[in-house]
Image 1 (cartoon, rainbow, N blue to C red):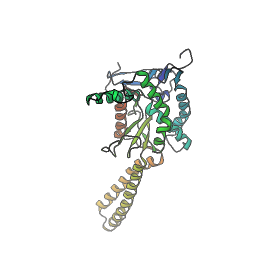
Image 2: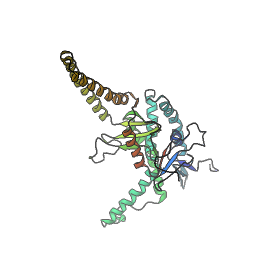
Image 3: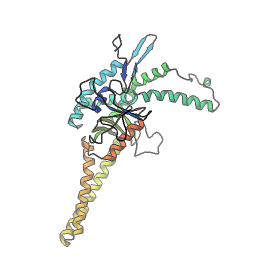
Image 4: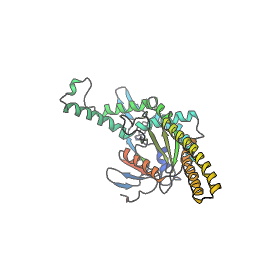
Length: 332
């Protein structure tokens, strides 16, 4: 703590998320540790969560009129969202959260989406990339008003303004999605990267801008614990899933009825087997689709876990964390 009472080391992945991925979930506050993989050094170590995914004065900027700080407002938001996440993790269901809870959690997701070091670095990268492109085309920055290489303070100011505006600008996109849960196992846990709100679009890979929050087909993930991940899905995709399921159920009923009649008449073993196979396929389909529709965790699927974990690694600027040691890595 600083002498003026403000936190000096400020987390861009809040401790309320880090704690849920701690090695010992029963550890007292202040002593929780996670296994951490450093992408920049390819090393694994076990830090205290107090010092990981954080920066000094990360949400503070000294200006002529005084210190601009978002730390208090972020702490207030985390205080409101913590019991909501606790209920979801304890009940392993979304059915108990209210519309107001969704508004609060949507604001949290919006803030978390842009509060990271990677999001701040992107502002600088974009600024420098645009300048480089202009110079490469023989266009001087002085030909465009305000176009110049931004200072560190200017980048931080833009970052804090984006963060301040995030609930209004981005929360509606999270709120409008269909929310669901997917599960993992303790021996195959979800990772938590230092940019934990990740996106993919398996339904619309070729279209320009297909990776935006409002893009058709977009999927969003946030690991809530080693065994539970919040998923947000474009409602149009969910509608397609429902329609395909309804069509599959309707078609299978007709086939089952016909096979059932044939098996009674002919006593053919192959008819009975085909009947059982169709019924089995329907049960497997419903085991994945119905929980997604009803806000319950979809069954464990190693391929789904691997895909979500891959996104956590890809999006992470540097740190990737989990509750257990990384397979094939030794602590550094």
